[in-house]
Image 1 (cartoon, helix red, strand yellow):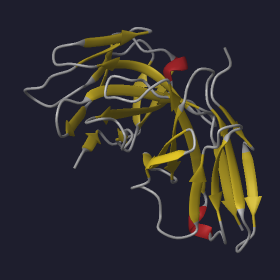
Image 2 (tube, each protein chain N blue to C red; image 1 turned 180 degrees about the vertical axis):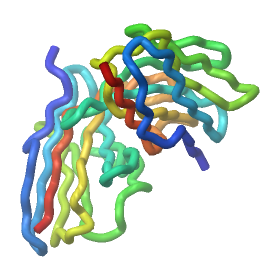
Image 3 (tube, chains in turn red, yellow; image 1 turned 120 degrees about the vertical axis):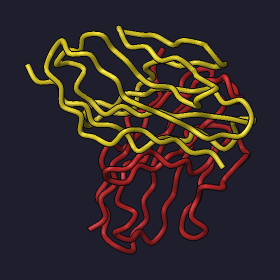
Image 4 (spheres, chains in turn yellow, red; image 1 turned 135 degrees about the vertical axis):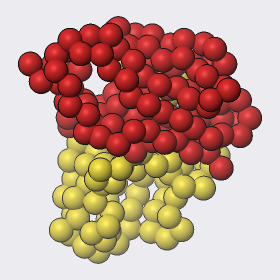
Length: 115
Length: 113
């Protein structure tokens, strides 16, 4: 059973460009979470999605960031007009359901560098 | 709101030493508690978890006990190895889980041979 997959593993963008990060959850998992890890910091929750629905986006910046999890295909985290402060590692996690007892399984992350 | 506080690193120990990494939390409701480990350049791996008070999570020689009275979930290992060198994150999730995991800042552990 393949784990959570993310691509690309590394992404370099110039200021003002768009970044698209992809996440394929573990087989059988329909719940996806995105987190951001800034240098020397812990992970910060960004958004929680189920298929075709954004359930909680309380951790998402109000502008330039969006996320989707379509009926078919991976979840996408999209950052428009990137700035240097967006440089971070972005991790996706999945779980078979939600709830306080559920374990989230993490992907290897996408490391975004904005020049 | 939820928060997790863990001891600052780096923590440097000799091989076979006893390890404790402190973690305390504040949370609404009855959270589940986790320790994740991150090796250089990799994602987070679940190390152990506990879902209710007095539960003990254990894995690979590591263990942590959910202490509701002290709101703590300290990570311990009796004899560390060089291969245990990594960053360790304490985390919790509460309520319906929709707001994701809340993480501590991480503790960098360095084990010297």
